[in-house]
Image (cartoon, rainbow, N blue to C red; front, side):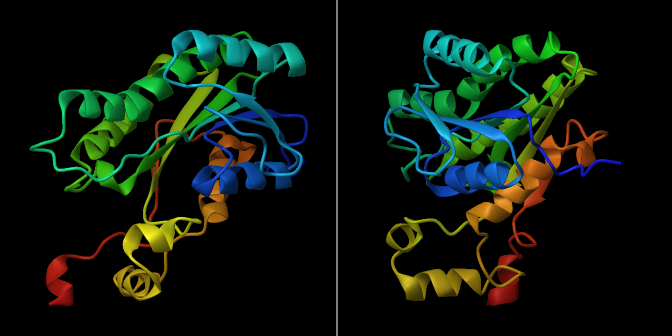
Length: 248
């Protein structure tokens, strides 16, 4: 029996794979032996061994060219990780309709567009393929100041379950619902080390995730160890967010 987490010979596309959680995912797939292609609107590869392509995943024509280019270069596409996403904080009452449209487009519609292009390739492959959507704990709880983002991620979880049914049995589709994660921007985002430490004390496991820990879950879902897992939304949140009354 071969090692199920040895992804040698498999081609993986990670959107937004050059920084933060995406970089952790990229490094984890590389460590598992995969050929990894990252994409972003600009930049260059930040993980040694990865190949990088410039693509705005909100542009269907650019996405089609991206996926075609990966297949032309590598002959196949085995795994897609839809990681590109995010949202700045904004008051839902005053944010413009255009702002909300952009947030939903990036976090929900773009993963669908990239998944469609990847699925067309995977359905034609004898080995099929695997799609992993990077979602958020915000899909399952109130998300004040990032309301459109939370709604989009809830939609992404629903999309995951629907595509898993539509595209089976050749393509498996799963999601990772990520909680708070330490990245290069964490201290600036939350207001310094003391504030981050206070937040971490509320997490059952006592700390935020590392990007490579999210990557481990994505690699698992893409691997043969998860060969009978599809339509799952797997939490990677350190035990979740305890009820507020536990802290008052």
